Length: 300
Image (cartoon, rainbow, N blue to C red; front, side, top):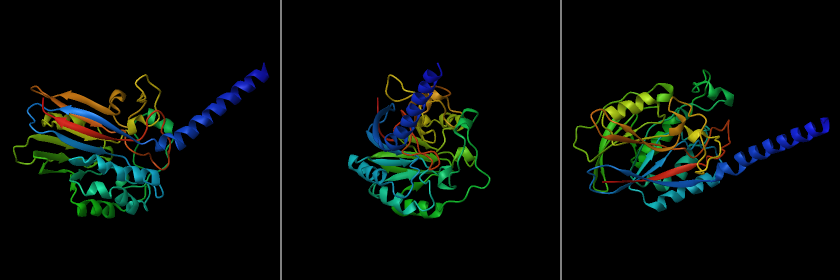
């Protein structure tokens, strides 16, 4: 009897260690480009948006660096970066190098908390009790160096502001917020133009932020932050079932597209990216590979 229990415990331990090794060594580098389609009634011209998020770069991540550089070959019309680019204070030069080919294209960005503050170790079980909070002794990251690189490339900083631009013959109205996860967000409205497409941008898809953009008649909202759940249960669809989102967004919306009904009719599409990395303090992903998404936005 004892021998059998010991064998079972050993097998369970081996399985756990094997799963952890897979989640750390294999899944973290199984980079995936997803494709999705968004239909916006009345849009006359098709537009391709590349959504990247949660890179959480650590120096020396060569596979991530090279994969990011290859994304420009898809020739998106516009790049949207929804924050959390860093996971180490020395990562800025490599992040800017990895994103260099994409920064030759038009784009915009908003900050995440890990563009301001270095990650701290957290008990993963606490994510089941509610969203994480900013550690009181978190050290600062070189935010100005990172954003200075984006600004120099011409990417639009949408931190609590709005902007108008024309891409691929489509007049865009953009509105973004600073990271809602650390309560820095403030919706500024839309540019005073007559756009063909309204896009809202945020790092954390907090429900009140999504409701604000929806009430303001955004056609599309892009966010990240959730890591798609990061450690998921297997599912028949192959995308994994999230257990947490690290915010008040329901787990069924932890990644991918969903839509929200606007007051007075119509819908706002929301895309939540599962992101390309993890905190340096929790380098595992399971049934949730790192991803970017190429969104084709077209008329009905």
